[in-house]
Length: 276
Length: 283
Image 1 (spheres, rainbow over the protein chains, first blue to last red):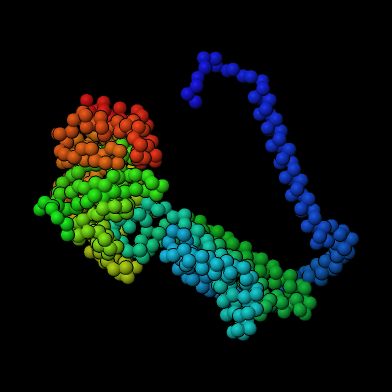
Image 2: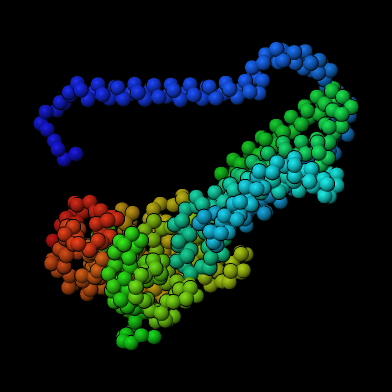
């Protein structure tokens, strides 16, 4: 940097050639990487018979038949689905509420900067990972066995499974908090809990709201499936129609679900924007 | 309680030294006393140790050796004593350290936290507390901005909210860490004047770190000059002479030949034109 010459541009051909060589090498190595990814994708597809076009072709008529049988959608029982739809909506809200209220305290234990002890940190992180890795459908089956059919096992399953993701995201929001106001609160002689409540929580509330609303949206979609294992809601109706092969009714229910999901999505998008 | 201290002693540090992880010497063992109502300026380059000294006065930086003794609460030993000391020793920061998306009033209210139990502070504070916080804002001339979000205020206004938050603590002492370093000259003057006037009116002891000599001369009752992690000058501004300034502001070049590793040369390299500029003002 300090070395300066009077000649403005002393370009020698050798270094520029080596730069271009380097550039070409970079390009070749990228090509190699792309080829490798492609090979892995190809192998995986072959392994699951995706490349077995004859079987695929044989399946097309069956799907066509199924589609023909589901048309036109049969909405005669639409009024009977309103109550299960309401169940599904209530399940998603109650499940999310369980998840959020359990996640707030857990997140403070699972965030590096607020955890009381590294052991607590690892313990809560493991708990969150565990909850996240058991699918809600499996939890639904367990809770149906425990408390019987209906919306309640669905709520419990959605709530418990959601803690895994909501708690992790809350904890991450806490870890990214601006430490400056936290130090200021410390310097004013506030207790640890006062600092968390008055300097950390206000900063993460928008993210908490964002994650919660997104999770509610997800839970609504998930709760339509929960009915399949007997955990109440519109999924229960869907399974019923599928079992008796009323495909016209099945397609009608799917359309109703699609409408509801679209409504919930746009509402949640709207809510998340207001919390920004 | 320790041996000798004058009647109006507010805070005393005894053989207090700070070494940061990585064996970075930030402050050599130092003994110094701060007196009631005194407006003390810590003067020095970045990395000279003034921030470390200031922040150890309320144990925001944990001293490696020695002790901090408060006239009110004694030696800062237990976390309880430290909290009570911090409650009466308010702090003003360079980057104000407010919660940006809260209103000015909400931020000032955090200065009242230490006066309430943890449980009580989970709920909205009583109206009298809100009124007090609002009076603090009015005192720094921001009564009308009470309900504005802090991120919508100017830098000078934000720092005044920081001062109002400090006032809300009803402090006997204010520590200000480079309170005007990120403000323009006109705003800096206004903020420092405000700070000094309030401290005078309320008899608050102030310890302020600054790197601008001009401000130190104008506002301080007492200047403590730091260089190479130790105090090199401690007297009223009138006694500050050129050779003191040379020592305070040329420490960076001295430090290179110093075998003892100091924070001055490791953590905060100072632009070389900076001290020269300050000296021109002095002459």
